Image 1: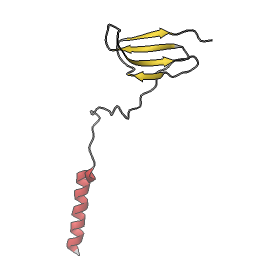
Image 2: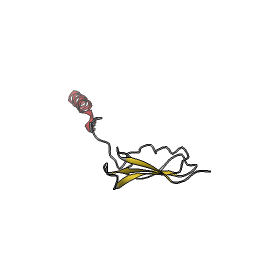
Image 3: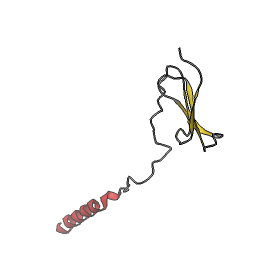
Length: 94
């Protein structure tokens, strides 16, 4: 009986020391883009397109967002962040 109690205690101590087999993750790992949720870009009720380009020549659009009158979040397409972008006014809101 004493051996069984001692073996159970050693097993419990071993599991606690090993962390019960969980995976250790660090904050340095990149996030999974497929499941990441970013905030939608603000529109402030305007009517324009925010276009993001691949480089400084502004010839290839890689994404952006569309804002429509009265809506306060953009409709996102492609990649909506980058250093090369243009805001294109589409008209006036009444």
